[in-house]
Length: 270
Image 1 (tube, rainbow, N blue to C red):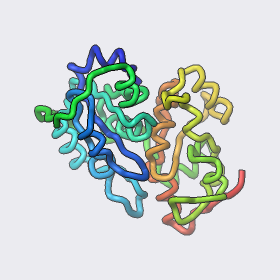
Image 2 (image 1 turned 45 degrees about the vertical axis):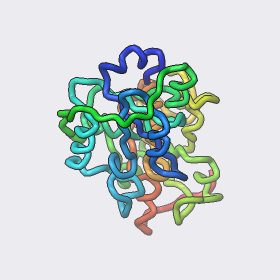
Image 3 (image 1 turned 90 degrees about the horizontal axis):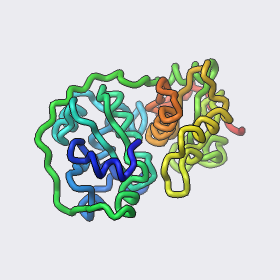
């Protein structure tokens, strides 16, 4: 994570990406046009950072070659830090952070509190479209661990697989997005909203560690996370990193991929 005051002092030496997005409205190009951090380039979470939806889920892994083109066009370089921000809830920024780290970039941080925190601190904004000189970053997948469906099922048995959706979705009482309700058998429910304060900012590391411990996360067991489509769960993986679990894995396909195979079991209830 990076706080507003620190970013204000280092922004000139970083590549800043605006990844505002919401489940209801999609990519936030209009919000970017209405105001963004000086020097920030807009990147579309759906079209640029994820593959097309399908059997691999609603937000699957991007094609590495396509991702490299996008990141270079946004000015991402191997020798410059990258800072990503969103509209304040941290979800798309966390998925952007995860994607760049998975792609092999060594220095990526999320602006804590996103665009609202920047504005609230009285920092400058602009409406001018931004263009960066072409970057040179080479995508090398594998920088962060990824779970497929079989690995997620095994982790639910042998480690700790966190289902980070709302409790009623985990229990199968309601499902507003996917065609099947429930959860992966053996997964533990820990909504990612537990990791943020009232302003949507990620809590301190000691509080995060306590929250994860209450869900059964322990140092001697592997841990991973999933959600509906791998966006919200990336936020939990970010929180796990903040808490010291840099080995945390993401089930990118998440529930939207799990249910594409009718032979995969579905659990309901607590």
